[in-house]
Length: 195
Image (tube, rainbow, N blue to C red):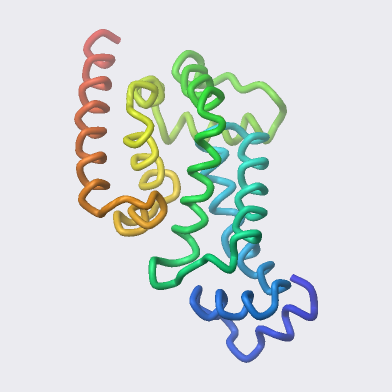
C-alpha cells in the first residue's frame, strides 16, 4: 500500500470487509488494501488448482475483475473473501483443461515438477496435500463438485462462504460435498485395493 492509503486507514487499524468496501467505493486507491489482505490466499487457491504460472494469472485477473466490479460488491451477500474466491473459481473454469492435466500429472508422477523451483515447491505441497489417488479421483468429479471440494480444502472456506462464492444455496453446497466425498472415497478405496 502507498503512504497515502496507509494514512487513510489509520482511523481503523484493521477495518472489516464491510468498512473496507465502503471506503474503496469512495476512494478506489483503497482497493489496494483488499489486494494486500487477500492476494496470497487467492493465489494459493488458484496455484493449487492449476499451476504456479496459471495461479499467478488467475490471481491477478481476480483482482482486476474485482476492482472493475467493486461497485457491485454487496456486503449483505457475504464478505470480500468469498466474493473474491467466487471470481477466482469462475476464472479457474476457463483453465479447466489445464487443471485436468495438472491433476493427471500429479497422479502419474507426484514427485516430478517441471518449471523451476517455485513450481516444484507448489507441486510438492499439492502432492503432499492431495495424494496421487486423490488427484486422480478429482478428475472424475463434476465441475460443481470439484469447485466445492477445492474451495473447502484449498481455500478453507466455510459452507456459507462457498455458497456465497459460487452463488448457490447452502444445501447445494452440502449435497455437492456429500456426493464428492462418496466419489472420492470410492476412487481412493479402489486405488488402495488395486495399488
